[in-house]
Image (cartoon, rainbow, N blue to C red; front, side, top):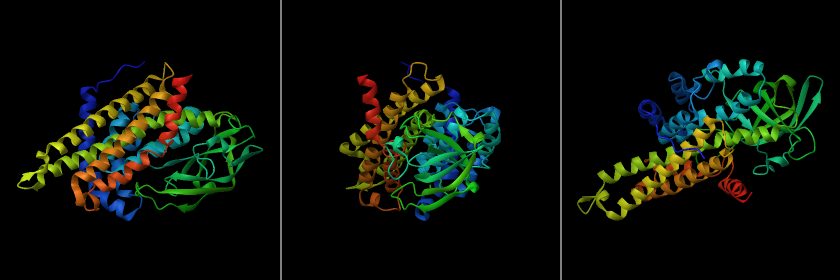
Length: 381
């Protein structure tokens, strides 16, 4: 088993820089982004200005080559200010992980530098209306036609739909459930149509939509992995992405607790700050303990990715990190709304937004019920 990790002085300094950036450039945009329910290009441009769009990508393709622990630190600090902005980084990384790990050198050279610079953004097309948790039942099909594949079908719950110009698409290439799926990379203007944008409870600054393909032609050079390897590509990708969803959840929880504690120290009842009430102090202490436990589990999962998963424990530890951190985020943000009382229920204060945003972390990239199935499968084998 991997050992617990302690952040280096350099990582602590890095966190402080990102935290200040998030406070100065991202937090002031968060409320308006949520109210408008639109993608925040100013937030994206701020990420570009700090070269954070390059963070997740190898140095040889114009990226920073940051460790996943370092990426988790950034996601956490951004999510504490605005969860939708943290998702800007997470989704392009998710969309490009199959390229990094399974794409040809030509495809990597063509697209990864554009993502790293912020010239392009990417989405991940896996789920379908009748194939969410059970992705192996997908119906989208790809048929070989000479040097191309022709793809027909649709995908749902696509983060960055209409914003991204690159889409990783999983499609059925034979009838076998698990070895009949293949992964492809398509450019949006080849024929990726956005049919609908969802109206959501939270993460409103991150568009989520339904995309459709009608005779979408993708050259075989843009196949990611071997024919029939798509299910493995998808699971390999999610195992390496889920820990950073955990980091996002930790950031949301920490941001809510920080705000609530500051509020309780200022808000007075009966002539005293409500922070003097032991009942509230204990609730805050419990929240802080659970956040720290979640943070350390997330860092452990990220460290396993950085080590190359030498002991084959990533799938289970990553599922634990994502499920536990997101459950903590939901519980803590709900308590933080309670700390603010009636004010917490209004959108003049950020904790209600954070509570709405936290909910999605329990659902996407595999619901927490699916994560528990993954954990149990490893325990029982």
